[in-house]
Image 1 (cartoon, rainbow, N blue to C red):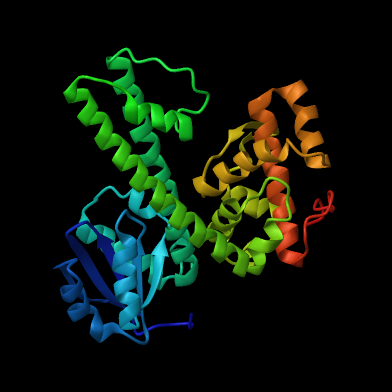
Image 2 (cartoon, helix red, strand yellow):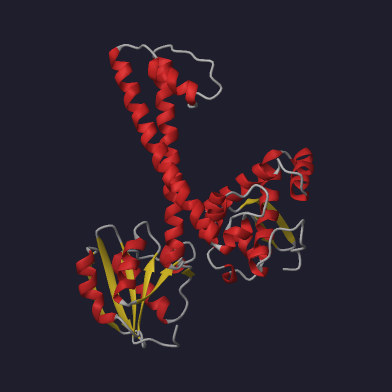
Length: 343
């Protein structure tokens, strides 16, 4: 970013409309108004503000397509962090006009808390892994529907894996009333289609992970698969944006909340702020890692005896997160407990 811009633009973004305030360097409002979020309407309005102008958009559900539209126009755009933008959250007068003006003013005075926007290639990786997650969730729902049909027809089985070869043959041959047989057939066809889509996505993820050096480093950690490595990579992005291992743990929501008053300090549950996908992946990796013989697994098992499974998984995930920070920062493979306390 340059020291100053010709105009500072605050955008209060909604699903169908956006209220916009254009403010100059001295704080004078040059333009205010509402526009449609239709791609062509946004392009028509913002095409004149490409170059030495700065746009601030609050992080809402539909910020990404709006941001990518501005990005394609050559507009310099930043993302406001809504949790930290107290001036908007606690304003006595709150409407679209006021919100966009405050965004522009905070941007002009360099007091606007910003959220990190990952580069497009990292956003694409994130989209790829989340597609697979969504397809697996759909697959689980269809499997639950199949179990529902079996329950309604009082059909019992003794298969350990109902969706293995033998189990699937049994489901296809099961004699049921026509209404339930048709229902089960549709679910089986859907399950087969979802399985093919998941396989295609998994192959894509594996090939992408094999071609990425950071992912190859992460896969040297016992319990980290192609998929887990790519999730971690897509959520972290450029490791240099974190100045310490503790900052990365904070981003994963794995640090304890702190309540301080006078000389009393109390630590509570983990904050769970930041990337839920990174946190879940690290905790799941602990479960996979504990099957291997290494010091990280030993740390988990020892803590599990004293603190219980839940706390042990979180504490081990935090340690794993610190190890990942050291590995990606130093570009080294996993080693048994390279010290990260000084980082």
